[in-house]
Image 1 (tube, rainbow, N blue to C red):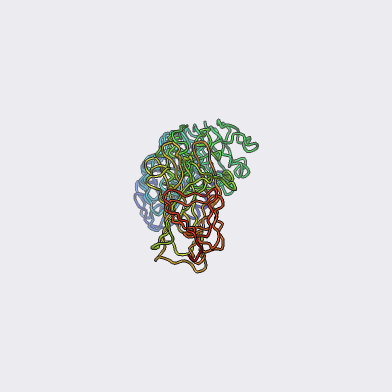
Image 2: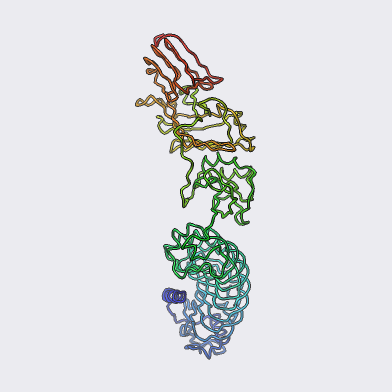
Length: 634
C-alpha cells in the first residue's frame, strides 16, 4: 500500500511541480553541478542519459541548453528547478557540487545505486521542497545542514530517505515545515530517541520511522500530527508505555483516513485505554499492528475481543479532583480531604499542571465517587501537598469530555444540614447583604473539612451589576489564607455564584453559624419589579464532608418578601419555607412550626395578639428579635 501511495503522490508532484522547459543560455553553476553528477554516478551507463552529452565537455557549449537533458526541468530564468532520475542506474556518490543548484526545488533520485554520504552541501539549497533519495545505498549521518532550508514560500516538503544505510540520530531542527507528504526515514540504521519536535508537523501523509534502532519512549508530541495514511514506528527498540495522547489521537482518526498504524516489534509494554474498544477496535483492519513483538498486558486481538489488558488507570486533568469533566467549586471543596497522602509519581514529561491529560498510575485509594485519589496530586510529584490547590485556581472552568458518566451520591429529600441566607436588611443604597450560615435543623455543631454550593439568583428582578461572596476573616470554619481556602466565582450571564471551601490543615472544624456574606449590587439603586414582590434565591449542588463522610444535600430555596402591604396576615404559621421579611404582623395569632431561625445581624419583629414559639425555633447571637402584643394596626 505504501508503494502505491508514494507512486501516486509522485505522479501528482511531477504533473503539478514540473516547470515548463525553457530554452536559455545555461548557468555555469548548474552546468558544473550536473556534470559532476553525471561523472560521479557513471552517467555513461545510465538507463537513460538522453541529452546529457551537453555536460561531458570541458565547458558549456555556445548554445548550451540544459532543458534537453533527460529528467531536468528549468524555471523561466533558465535555472535548474527539478531533477527526476528515478530508477536510472545512477551508481556512485552524490557530488558536493549539487549544493550549487540554488534554485532546485525537487531532487528525485530514488531506486538507484547511490552510495557514500549525503553531502552536507545540499543544505545550501534553500528552495528544496521535495527530497527523495530512497532505495539507494547511502550511508553515514543525516547532515545537520539539511535543517537549513528556509524557503518561506514552501507549502509542503517530502523528505524520503528510506531504504538506505544511514546511521546516527535524527538531527535537531530537521522539521522545517508544518506539512509533509512523506517524512520517511524507514529501513535505515538510525538510532537515539525520536525527537519530540516531530510534533511540530501539523499534517503528513506518511510518518514512517520503522526498521531502525530508535530507543527510548514514544514522544507524546507525535499526537499533535494529523496523519492521513501511515504512522509507522515498528521494528525499533522503543520501550515503555504508549502515551495516552497517542491512543487518544488514533481513536479520533480511526473513522477517517488513517490506513496504517504500526508499533509492533519494539519493547513497548503496558495496557490499552478502554475507550479504544468503543471505536478503534472496529475501525482498523490488518494494517493496525500493535502487540506482536511487544510486551503489552494482552494481545491487541484479545483486548478487542474480551477487554483483556485494559488499563485500570485514567488520565489526570490537573484541578479536576473528582474527575467529572470540569474544574469547579466541587473540586475546591474536596481538595483538603486527602492532604499529605502519597503515591506513585507521574513520568518526568508529565510533571505539569497545565491543562492537559497526563497518564498516571492509580494509587489504589478511592474518593467518594470511586475515582482514585491520584487526581488530587495535581503536579504529579507523588504527594498531595498545599501547592496542589493552585491547579484548581489556575484551571477553574476548564473542561474535558469523560467517556463515562461520573455518578455522585443521590441527593436525599432532606438532610439535617442546611445552607442558610440571612438577609441583614432590605435593599439599602443599591445593595442587598445577606449572611451565609451553615446550620443543623436539630441544633448542635457541624464537623466539617470542606464543602461546596451554588447560589442561583436568576429569579431576582432588577439589573444586578455585581455579586460577591466573602468568607468571614475569623469564623468557626477557620481563617482564610491560614487554615482555610475558599473560592467564590461569579457567573454573571447565568446569574449564579459558585462557592467552594476546604480546610488546609488536615483537621476538621466544629461549630455552626455564619461563615461569610453574600452581597448583591444593583445598578443605579434599582427598584423592585412591579410584577413581583419576592426575591428568590436557590441554593443547589450542595455537598459537605469531614474526614470520614460526605453528605450531598438537597436543593434549598430562600424567598424574601419586600412588599410592605403583605406584612399583615389574619394568622401566621411560620416555617422554614416561609418567605423572609423583617416584620410579621397578625390581627390574631403568630406561631412557628418546625425549624425557624433568626440569624445573626437580622432584625425581625413578630406582632400579634398572641405569639407561640414552638420547638425548633431559635435566635442566634447577634440577632435583633422583638415580640409585640397587638394587631396590625398597633
